[in-house]
Amino acid sequence: MRTAYSVETVRNAERELMERLPEGALMQRAAAGLAAACADLLGRAPGRVYGARVVLLVGAGDNGGDALYAGARLARRGAGVTAVLVDARQRAHPGGLAALMAAGGRVVTGPHEVHEVHEVHEGHGTGADGPAAPLAHAGGGTGSAAYVALHRAHLVMDAITGIGGRGGLRPEAVPLVRAAEASGAVLVAVDLPSGVDADSGRVDGACVRADVTVTFGAYKPGLLIDPAKERAGALRFVDLGLETAGTPADLEALQHADVAALLPVPAAESDKYRRGVVGVVAGSARYPGAAVLAVAGALHGGAGAVRYVGQGGDAVLARFPEVLVSGGAPADAGRVQSWVIGPGLDDRVKDARADVLASDVPVLLDADALAGLDPQEVRGRSAPTVLTPHAGEAARLLGVERAEVESGRLDSVRKLAVKYGATVLLKGSTTLVAPPDGGRPVRVNPTGTGWLATAGSGDVLSGLVGSLLAAGLAAVDAASVGAYLHGLAGRSAARGAPVGAGDVAGAVAGAWRGVGRG
Image (cartoon, one colour):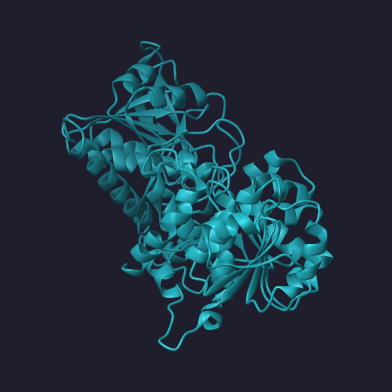
């Protein structure tokens, strides 16, 4: 399980650890890990570390200190290191500056002028080296040294703001960041890309788009959730020895072993009811394909049997003759262990929804079944309910604009779960699953792919999750495992090319086998 913790939790753990360590030791641990990661990245490029050109975009805080100490380590290995002080007042971590200069590094203050450094003022505040100090300097220079250094760099570190930063980049930082992104150098974010929110994954304004993020001590939720996740690039983790045991994670991502442990495996004495029977209410005269795809997801998700109710019976039987088809009301379809309702339904959805919500088995509501849903229809149920909206449907349920959901996915999925008292699977590039109380942890699916953004893909997912509910998995587990397998199936079916929802359904069994083998 990969876990992520809030800034507050990380800060508390850092304070507790610093009380047991010599002054400055924690920053040196971070710097050592950062330098090692950057050396590895440089080692994969022509020239390796010795003779490599490294630029540090340095802000005024400890994040900048991590980069300066890491830059000093690289300079001692023969790299040419230039620190660009991005802060408008040209402040930076004094101890880090001194270390870089002692190692032969160069300092450029601001985006326009180069200055010779005469003195570093050591402070007397918190931390080993005191507060960020203004740099004493003499004027002069070429007026473009920062941009020249960025243009020639092999690797650039973004250490402008740390995990406590809020909002987008300040105006003075934006031209430097854009120059770094355009340079062709490997862009490494220190702990978190500057301009993104560590706790929520929000991006409010200009931000860094990194190739790699080296994060310290614990993963932060924003690194695992879009839109920030997409800006973070590949993640590298540096263990600082923080103690987070006993503290609930804010976010968690299942890994192969976690999913394998949750997959239902039929016993020798199993029959179709022990494996789980799924009822699917989907499709219409206009959208018969939705019925076929939802049923396909259920069958490939391990159901012992599928009962179908709706107008797409002929299409379903033509594709899956093993399905039990009924033309009446859901309550008359026969025994089931879960219901899936919503994909491709017509205006009869309200009556069918009331029917399945009156049952005492888990119910998954998707697509048309979410339209106009009253929280009281869900809250009074004795069995679990799972809602699977995309961003637009979530926005309508919350009464907000779609952009608000897309920019604040973690907050939105929690609000929906609390409003309806249901498990919520918020579909998207990073699918999230929140428990009915909206509490911690929320789960994020790590297997998603943009190729799944195709018509009918969500119908397959609904059937798959419904099958896992029928097998007896808890609602949060069924939603999380279903999303995980769905993502793997999408990747396998696509292989870097466009794919249809039917192909995704057909790849679920292979994804299941792959996870089961570990």
